[in-house]
Length: 149
Image 1: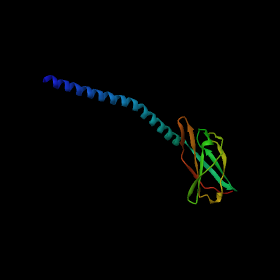
Image 2: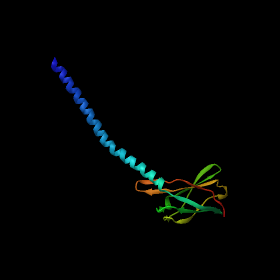
Image 3: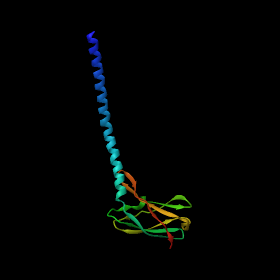
Image 4: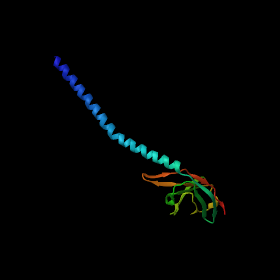
């Protein structure tokens, strides 16, 4: 009868050892995944902190909204991925753009977007979408209010 108790004890110990082994294997596998996800989040936060752009002036003539954008830091930006949205009558619209410039460090450049009825714009919002190794991230939005030229 004493042998039956020992066999049950060995089975329990083997089950505990198997559970510990499985936990270690899952920890090793998911540790790499978690670190990779953390790095991606850090890249996006860094991207947002490093953007320093400003709209110097803005106005519209006809259906053309013109604004001068200034890069206030030492990074160059590919403007092809920048987004312009306008708020009109309480609704937000994304404006198609065809900007293929590099905005160099400490440079100021004029951009033009075609917008129907620009006199009705309540607010224009410029959003830098910045390309980086892991994909894209968005910089802080810059609001401006175009007036008639």
